[in-house]
Image (cartoon, rainbow, N blue to C red; front, side, top):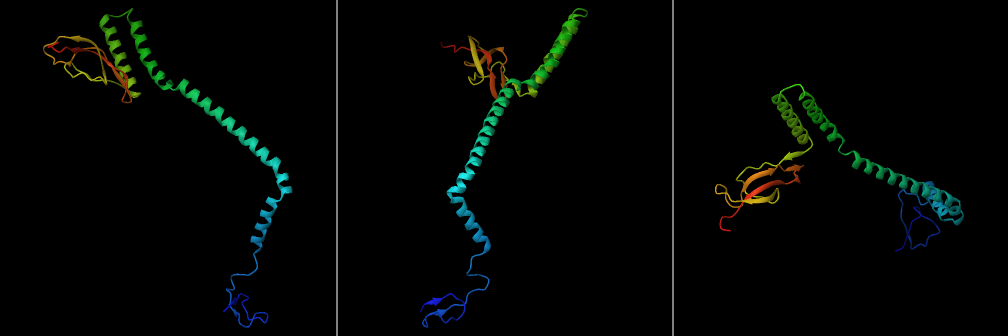
Length: 196
């Protein structure tokens, strides 16, 4: 059997059609909000309204393009400044070491060698401390340690009976790491294999 949605019995319906009672909260007529939205959609698709809004779109696009270019220039400048001045804190800390060395040199004119030597030792200690604050650490190595190509660079081979073949016989220059990355390898002498 067919149903009609009039919500009330009507005389215009076919007698074989059953009328269904509608929920009173749902109206058969569209709301004012939905009508307004539909009108806005139609106005947006109207070619005349598009022609009116076109200069606004062009202006917004040009502004966005200018903003993007300004952002690119600002980011490039910040990158250049970061590269240029990234070591400023480290350099400032190194100045205290330089001051200590200069004081030791000035004192050398008036004082004995032992006092100058003590001043240089204090400057070295201050410099090692400064490097440590910035993540630079010396690589610990001892005579007899096995050669590790990751942190050591062999400069010469020695015949040594007290050190096994491939062991370190002497340390020529201290190596350093920066934040656990190799900065400079330890220059070492390595024991020769006695068979060769």
